[in-house]
Length: 82
Image (cartoon, rainbow, N blue to C red; front, side, top):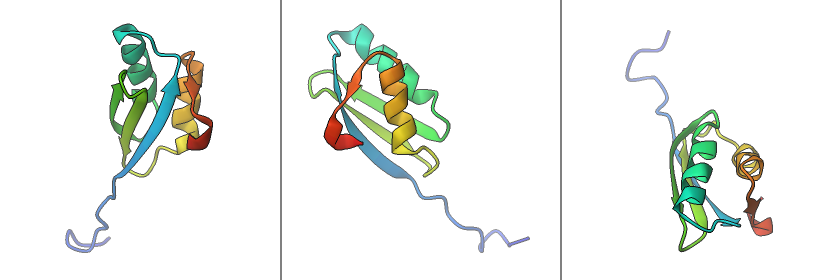
């Protein structure tokens, strides 16, 4: 077993996806909740004005899983994002 100093430091990654179809704060909450349920997602922030979601993960949440969560919530992910 590696010592405390030999353990790898987990790397976080940030992903930004554009989202079409959000119209109100309720839409934002729905998208944030859907993304937050994806395994590996550590933090999510959805902005209605910019129509984008910024997702931070420990490297375990693939972009396709996040995009699918958005689609499953009833919204469209920008084509250039996936």
